[in-house]
Amino acid sequence: MKAKVEVFLKPGVLDVQGKAVEGALHTLGWKDVANVRVGRTITFDLDQTDAAKAKAEVEAMCDKLLANTVIESFRVEVG
Amino acid sequence: MKAKVEVFLKPGVLDVQGKAVEGALHTLGWKDVANVRVGRTITFDLDQTDAAKAKAEVEAMCDKLLANTVIESFRVEVG
Image 1 (tube, rainbow over the protein chains, first blue to last red):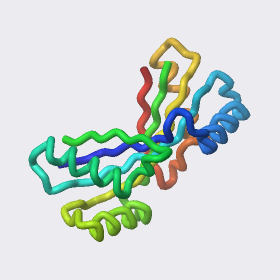
Image 2 (tube, rainbow over the protein chains, first blue to last red):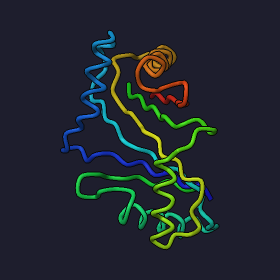
Image 3 (cartoon, rainbow over the protein chains, first blue to last red):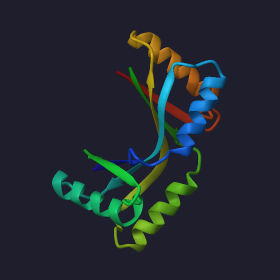
Image 4 (spheres, chains in turn orange, yellow):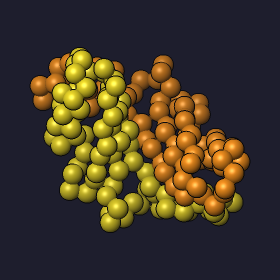
């Protein structure tokens, strides 16, 4: 089973990387770009056939390692 | 219109960050995890109502700034 995790900074947290990308896009002429947020995506294979169990397992991985839940939120997809 | 760009290292390129995450997950007991790849996701708003034009514009941004197309591939979603 394939798993995909998207990790983003929570809405209130300043995304300096996003601000830098936004500034660079404006400089390159794309002035209509706004609210840039940069997150990371982690994909992997998992030896688990039950989708619900797989999702619970991946959420545990996020809590323990893949995301810093103080400042980041995550979204899990399995399938 | 919202745009979402996913940037990953191309399949042949060694993903050291992915390897590190895989090792850490194994150490934490998730031995069944394999093929971990870490990429980045960039989301933003765009002042463009035509989906095809928006997609072309975002692909140009990827080529110029958001992805290093020598070693990275990208996927664009708009809507």
